[in-house]
Structure formats: structure tokens, C-alpha cells
Amino acid sequence: MQKYSFLSVFLTINSKNEKMILVTGATGLVGGNLLWYLLQDNERVLAIRRTSSSLKPLRTVFCFYTSEPDKYLERIDWIVADVLDESSLWNAMINVTVVYHCAAVVSLGGAFGSITETNVAGTRNIVKVALESGVKKFCFVSSIAACGIGKSGQLIDENTIWEDHPHKSDYNRSKFYSEQEVWKGVEKGLNVIIVNPGVILGISGSNTGSAQLFSQVIKGLKFYTNGGSGYVDVQDVVKSMIELMKSDIKNERFILVAENCSNKDILSWIADGFGKSRPKIEIGKNLLLSIGYLSEKIGKLFHFTPLIDRGTARSAVHREYYSNEKIKKAIGFEFKKVERSIHEICSFSKDLKLKLKPKFYSHTI
Image 1 (spheres, one colour):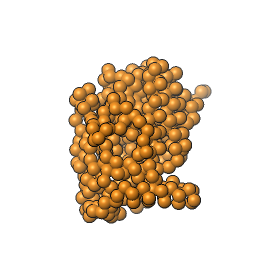
Image 2 (image 1 turned 120 degrees about the vertical axis):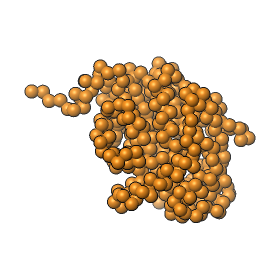
Image 3 (image 1 turned 90 degrees about the horizontal axis):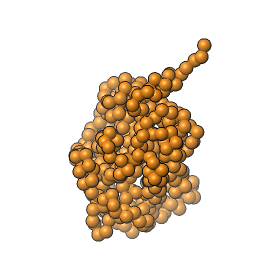
């Protein structure tokens, strides 16, 4: 008697359904929160994870929304795959009609080659397989890092021309080139939504990306830089993605930024949320560049990736302003205030520390 795995039966049954959803980067900040919201409207969702991926961070994300996270985690159908392994993506994309591509390396520093491998080559692979598998709509999580540069403080929008610049980090470049792979897919007939979120704030269950800001402040950060950028709550990011994918809109990109905030304000609000002293000492551009240069040299000497290099140093003292008018007009979206987002994250993090075992909490911000 022939045996069938649960997943093969699930794929067969659902092949006749109107929609079958796949999420990449499902254990990350955007992917994890996206899964939660998708499960509010779908009985089951397919998600990709690598063999080495831990599901503990995702459980932490779900704990933010519910006291019964396991009940929802059980409704995710996991497929072991890697965006760098094209053959594994073919298996993952059987009967899939909707793809949310959230997988990416988010790095403050690091070698361009390693970032490019996942962000650019990985995106190229999944776009190729999505095209050939007949995916009906594809959502790509890009970044404001792939947007243009504003002149003299002007608002950056979706039409601002991207230019390479000394303050652009290797991560910025990788996101720009990743987005170009998606536009190539559009030229070949793929229906696409691209979102360009600002600095994303939210519960991720790991100490990467914006979570590093929280972990630094909770230790008692005394310094700040005189820069700033666009910020957005992860819940607003995933809600926007879902609304855009449900709409008739296609082959458009949307900047997702709630507010343009200074670094000092962000760090001060986080400090307030944790009951810490606000940072009061400004680090100037020249000193920060020197620290970045020294960090690069030490990193090469001892073979590690420094938290800050000259590229991230330039970004830290640079101020950019972004427009969110397009997404507001397209679907009437209203964003949560950044200070409120930070308050919610800090409150949950403090509560989680009391509830969970120390070993488990080490995976959270």
C-alpha cells in the first residue's frame, strides 16, 4: 500500500483551491509577523525554513499576539528549502499561487559577497522558479535602502533615482540589486508587489536588525549620532503587504514609513520604555569614521564581522526623509506612531523576560 506524507496529501487537496500561499524568510522579523496575520484568514500556510533554522524566535513572535502560540504554529506547513538551492525551491513551489519573499540577510556591516549571495542570488532563484511554476502574484520585501537619495533634505519617494554613494552600505547595494532581479521577473510576466519598508521595529525573537538597537539601549547606551531615517512598525509592514496582494494593484513599489525620526529620538524612546537614562553624548562624524576604520582593520585581522564599518558609520550620521503618500493614496493606509510601537515592544520584552526561562529569553531582544 502506497504511503503519503501529510504534506503531499495537503498539496493534492489544496491544488484545487483558489489560493495557496508560500512565505520565505518565515523565521525572521517580517516573515514571522506575516505568518501570524496570514493565519488569521487562512487555515494553513506553507513556509520555507532551512535545516539549521530554529523555530524558537517564531514562537516568541506569536507570543506577542497570543497566549496560545503553539495552536497557531501547528497550522504552518514547513518545507525545508534554501533560496540558494534552486532544486529545493521547485519542491516548495508545487501548486503555490501566492509568494511572499521575505528572506534576506540584514546586516549593519559585513562582506558584500556574503550578503549578495542570499539577497541577490537567492532572489534571482526564487523569481525564476515562481515564473516557471505559474505563481499568480509575488510580493517582494525590499527596503528604503534600495530607494534614491534625496537632495538637500527633500522627501524621497518611489520615483527618486537610486545612485551609489559613499554612505550606501553593502547591505544597501544588495537590496538595490535584489530589487532589479524582481523587475526582470516583471518583464517576463510575473505579477509583482514590491514594498520598501524603513527601519522595521517589532518582535523578532532574535538580536538582529533593529533588535540590536533595543539590546544596546537596555545595556545603558550613552551615545547617539546626529542622523536619522524612516521607521515603521512590522505590523504595518505585513498588513500593507497583505492588502496590496489582495488588491488588483500589480507591478508597483511602495515606500512603507510611518515617520521620519532622528537617531536620538529613537534611542530616547527605547530608553524611556526600559526605564533607562536617555543617551546624551553625541558622537561626531569624524570620530565615528575613525571607529569604523579601526573596526574594519581589527575584523580583518581576527576574522570577524564588525558591528560598524566606515559604510555604516557614514549612514549613522546621515539624515534622510521618506514620503508615504503613495501607499496612503493607493489603499488608504494609516500608520501606527513610532513612539507607540517602541512602547509596545519594550513592554512585551520586559514581560517576556519575567515569564520565560533565561535560556529561551536569550533568543529575544
